[in-house]
Length: 249
Image (cartoon, helix red, strand yellow):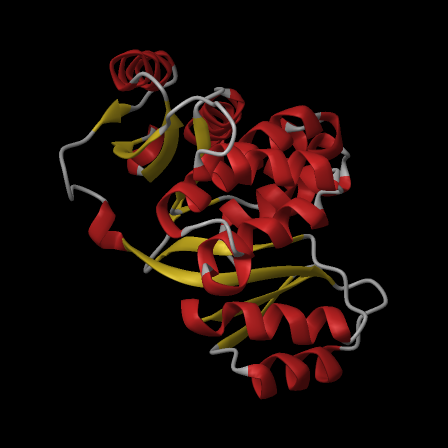
């Protein structure tokens, strides 16, 4: 498991995810709007929208909020027009970063992202400077507590998962993008709750970080994910769980 996944798992257990629910709702509303704009407002015929609606329900977003966001995307209600941008960057210790942004002002967004990077030991890269290191996959993270390894692995693999990994107190299920929905549904039908479930940009290889660079990249991840326009940040760092826990103490 990457340090990135460990970090999100530990944050979830410490309640950091719940503390930032407003940010989660804002992110999902933007994604709903853009997905509906680009592919139509019917989840049955729009796979991207269907995935985001599932995310919204998992986050306990009210149904009215979901409907309004979709209607703004289809033009049935007035709303802000967002542009999708992915910035490529390097962080402390040479870690690669993909920063996915939805913004109504790309000039403002790139300036603010550049400032956050430079303030925390990183810098923007050129096009495809790090994107080639990542591949899109479905990714499910499951806490080991109360979950039978063999049963979960059987359900996931039977539903089409490509890989099943163990690391400390979590399981990771990795799928091809087209198999993600089927695997997620099968896991949930089996009564297993996920710490996180999403289409993710996973790195092919990882960079081990310790000490000051590790603390710097974790702080950088925090400030980037707190930015209003940032939807997701993917990285290839690997950091020991104890060091991550200390950073979130």
